[in-house]
Length: 362
Ligand code: GN1
Ligand code: MG
Image (cartoon, rainbow, N blue to C red; front, side, top):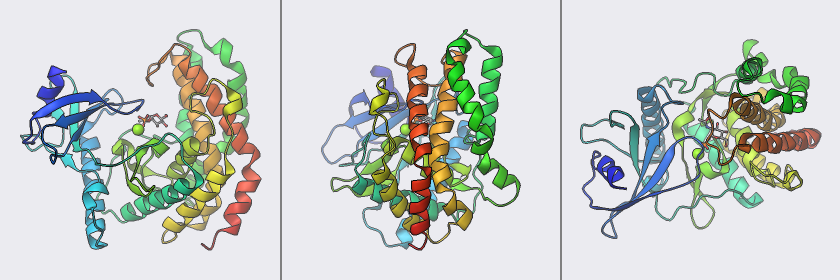
């Protein structure tokens, strides 16, 4: 990977590079691990930013810089130890910029956090620490003074996502609408109820706060004992409802199957994970969460499988222009799997409500 090495050398590091190899399973950016010579030297993570999706790279990188600086400051104030493993550390280019543009593609480099682990699935115990960690993450950035831009405008706005689905159906670019009628109808039946968050916002009852907006399980680094080190993949850090971080974590963590499971029998919504995560989250957010936010956490747990179904389905109908796919039907398989998860969450809504009500005073 000769040219990847050249790209790494545009950044301000003094090490000899041994190798650059693909890392992780993100659906949007391309990620590589950079191996350097010498045992004590830090290793790095190189990322090609998908600028078809993140069109304002300056805004994107500025958001990330503001958030990581703010968190670093908070960790210092709290006298935390091992701070370099608890917040991402980005390397500037030799010109002092927070990304490198090679004339065609955009790149960024960060220090690889040693002895860290990512998971595709978690136990209830890990879910509890994850809940606490996302709660604390939101809490640490709840008082950030600088404005952050919306790197993808209205990213988690379900009304916009439903409109995008409608547009996709009207165009029917590759003739796939006829095979997905069932899902379109089921989505439509719940559309009004699922737009509750946007409605509460319009009525002035629900605030936007700075959220992570991509809190999948695999966007969290754990140490070897199962403590959360930090939250990664900060591209979508932006103003949103707190439902985003709560709901998207459970969408991945409480799913007993895979996001793209072909066997729908594998999929269920795991209430043990829900309870453990919710407990941690309520603890981590107790200093700022409003009653309207707390009470609607079960809605958030339903909203994210619903929204992800809408997004995967729209991409399938559009002919797979957004998400990376591994085979032609991949987005349809993802749609079905997310819908199954949604239905399972829907059935458990009352149980979720009861649990939240009983834990309001944590
Ligand atoms: C994308 O890049 P990755 O895989 O972390 C997507 C999320 C989706 C997720 C579905 C910018 O995240 O919103 O929930 O795939 N990110 C963007 O797995 O669209
Ligand atoms: Mg990711």
